[in-house]
Picture 1 (cartoon, rainbow, N blue to C red):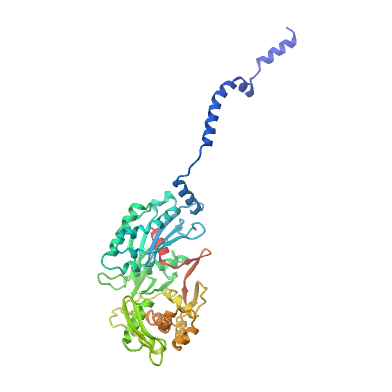
Picture 2: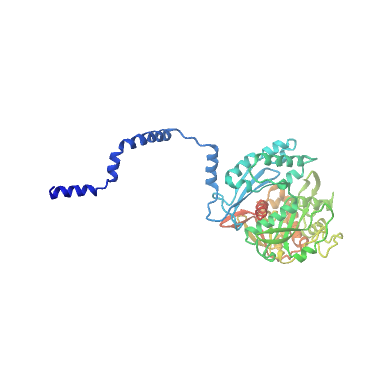
Length: 475
């Protein structure tokens, strides 16, 4: 064998078959396996696809659900069942109990009409009216978090005024509705008629939360006065020692002090709701003082009657018109200042304990009709959400209003509604007297009028549902 042949044979001994040689050798087997798989894939790809309602809901969840890095999210669903309609608020909190936006807003807010009280004779229909709002709430809470998301229904003035057991029947129908239709965590006590004290407490929580005060010591918080139509609430944090001095109340009465655990801090909250002393209800109380005779709080030139809560009261001006000083005298009587029934060291009015005062009351935020009237008569710029004023500003505005007659007031106060004009002197005198004589504020003390509070570059309504959500999310 020549050398060239020997070389070729040695090369064959060390020859290794390449990957591509293997493919060529086994191409028949590979085609038998791959061709059917390819055909099946083409068939599946060509089939039409359908999206289930589950996919649609989850897509909506992805659209509205917060996207934050790390930490756990907690949701709270609050139904505000008012007299004019029902509203649902959905809030989302991070593990520090800070609000996390839902979509482009700090909350989901949806409302519909009429309210639950419109279904007095049909409790099931009342409950069913909440279904669209419930679905909207469920669509923005991730499916895996719904069973741990608390839901509350707080009914206010509308249900309070229903006769007989209509209110109780509607509340039970709503409880049954949530149990059968809701995927949220609905506890037995989650559906209630809120009393004035609860509204006052929740509003205190809302405002202090938005201001970043919760979690701090009680002396760093602000007090709140909320003047509604039928009642006025005062709420502020007090020391534990003052809480222990709170007078005992009779059975059936609301206690003066509520304990609340918020952002890791225990608060003793003095809160009291004064029924019949909201702005509209107080008009009736002031008119009762003078009875059939003329009232010095009515603007000159007006003769009529005032209807409120099923009652009708004579409302006529004196021949000489309205008078600031005389109206003050009548208002003090209506408020029952220095009521003999006061058995405590210090009372507000009507024999009600004042909470003892203290640092939690040094910064007062005043809302609702206090804000509205101030905006209408020019005490503040109506475009503002928050403004600093003094009780004495209401006194100055009252002097101006009481010095006009009805006709002149139409041009002097163009932003006041026609129905309210005859009572403008009365309203402003009442507001001043309530702050200074009723709640004991100095006429020159700075107070903050508030409609909305800025939070993370957004303006948030200073209302009770957020306070309720914060409380339930704090547990």
